[in-house]
Image (cartoon, rainbow, N blue to C red; front, side):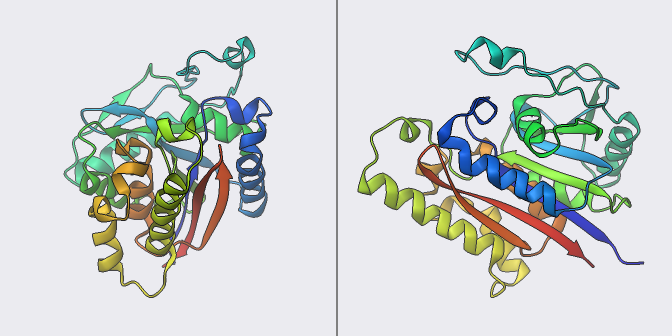
Length: 269
């Protein structure tokens, strides 16, 4: 029987702005709606969000996780957003078991809610909120190899109708978002994006070379400028660990006047 895996790394934009009609997020909104319309609707969604870090991979295991409005200084309506999807405790426990079998210490959290790395993009992609979801935290040491291994452990899930989402941002220099655009900023942004597009999508790369690129991402052009701290990049490492292949499709867009990208894997092996 063939194994089918579907993963999406998405750039989730600035806080709740994609849901507030912000023009700088128009391309992102259109891209996410296009993706959800083209892929088969999943039975459950596993989200690795840039906005949750723990000492070990931690998994939401509650039946009805609340929303966490983990942003500040936005309009009042930003704190009234709803996304009443269910949790999936059985899937959470299954993942914890797979992590244990892979030698990865993990934890279940019955009370933790869903942060905006989940509810903002999913409200755009699946506004009916009728797909159960769980979140998995990053590991706060931010080691790339550990996050690839988390994705590899998820390969053992035997449900081909799942969707794994890495919710981060391909470019995440907060100062640059609010600085006047210069040729220097543009070059740094676009050089790293070109490296990322090649790393994720080039069929000329062998998988060992692709893996090495992910592990040694800091050697990419202007890597530390584009990611002074890598929490928004590492959800991509989980997606790659889950698929271990070139992405099926890449999406190049502008978000907040910066070149950004998203990557979709639909892998049959």
